[in-house]
Image 1 (cartoon, rainbow, N blue to C red):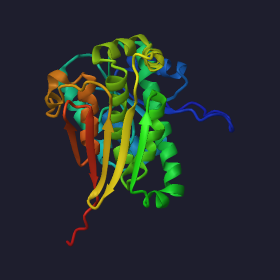
Image 2: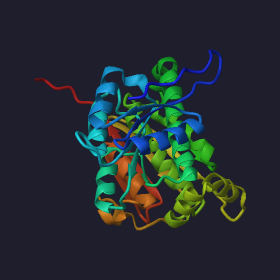
Image 3: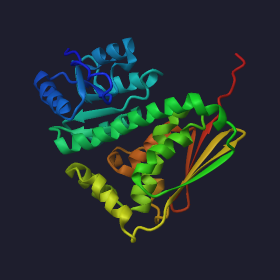
Length: 312
C-alpha cells in the first residue's frame, strides 16, 4: 500500500484524495500516475477488504474511491455495498473500473451505489470528465455541510420554494439548497442532482444518451452543453420545486422537453444499465422514499418521508 504524498502547503486550494483499489500492481501504478497528473493525491489498496478497513478506521482519508470491479478477497461491488451501509462513507463517490461490458454487472453496480463505470483501458479524457463530476459532488457536499449548521433551522420554516434553471452550473447550488430543506440532506442530494441533470441535459438541451456518451468520451461534454444552452433553439427552462407536507418533503422537476418512455426504466434492467435516463432514475430511486413520473415523463415528483418514531 502506497501512502499519500505530502499534502499541499497551507493556504493553497485543497487537493482531493483518491483511494485507488486495484489488485494488479502494474495497472495501479499506471492509473495512479494518471490520477496524480490530474492533480489528485493517491493512496492505493490491493483489494476491497483492505480499502474497507482503511476507510472504516479513518473515513475521511479519501474523498473519492476508484475501484476495480473484479478482485480477490472482496471485489469492487462488495466494497461499494459495505461503504454505502456505513454512515461515515455512504456519501463517497465511487468510480468502478471494469474490463468487461457485462450489462448485468453494470446494473448491479448502479443499484449498489456506483457513481460511474469506466471501461479498461481507461481513456484519459473520459477519466478526467468522470473525476470532474465526482469532484463537484465532493465540493457540493462540503458546501452543504457548511450551510446546514448555519441555515437549516431557518429552512425548516420554508413551506414551498421554486427555481428556474437553464445552465448545468446551476444544478449543484440548487440541488444543495433543495436538499438542505430535509434532515436527510446528504442522502437525497445525489438524487436531486440526477433529476435536475436529466431535466437540463435531456429535457431542455435535448442531448440524448448516445450523443452524451460520445461527448463524454471525447472530453467535449461541457463545451457541448454550454453551446446548446447559448443556442436560442433550446429555449425555456427547467422548473424545480419543493413543498413541505405533513408526511415529508415533496420535490418536483419539470422540463420543457417532449418526455421519454419512462415506464421502461422504472424496473431495473441490465440491458439498459448504461443508458443515462436509467442511471439517473436508479440514483433517484435509491435517494427518495417514492419516485413518480407523470404524463410523458417531463414531470417527476419525489418524496422523502419523515422518520417515524418506533415504540419498541
